[in-house]
Length: 174
Image (cartoon, rainbow, N blue to C red; front, side, top):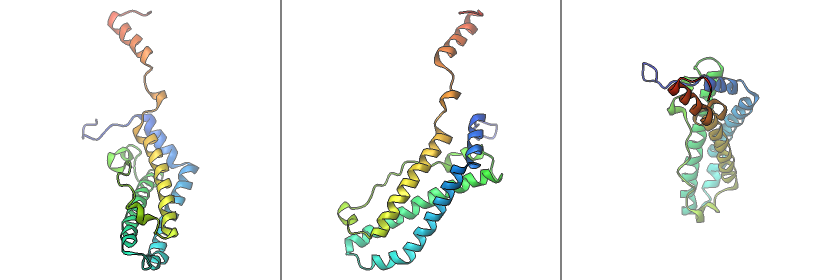
């Protein structure tokens, strides 16, 4: 921890974050995410609104629930991507992007009533599937960059024990 209580970030992690923000993978993921947000908004305000009027009561409730899940999922992805872009543009330090409030977690809520899902419009189902796959990929990136320690940066367990023995016994060779 730093003196202000903020978490300290290993130097390798800051480098990984900055490198990702400048990568082609980030560019592609950012474009895909923002395009999906726009496509979803257009669908929900246009064709989806028309499609939902034709649904049974149970299916209409499932539509409302799933469309809320969809927009929430996409807003979380968009927020994460915007943090990475802020790092890229120098508006945010890579170390600041490590704050827990920017992490993506596993989505706890599953899909709604299974019997009503088969009645949902194909357009909504496709957006749900694409948004779930994008969320899973971005969450994987998030975990790799911010949460999981990199193996090459962890001390080797045998060598660290040797170092402890050397320190304890003051010997150069073991």
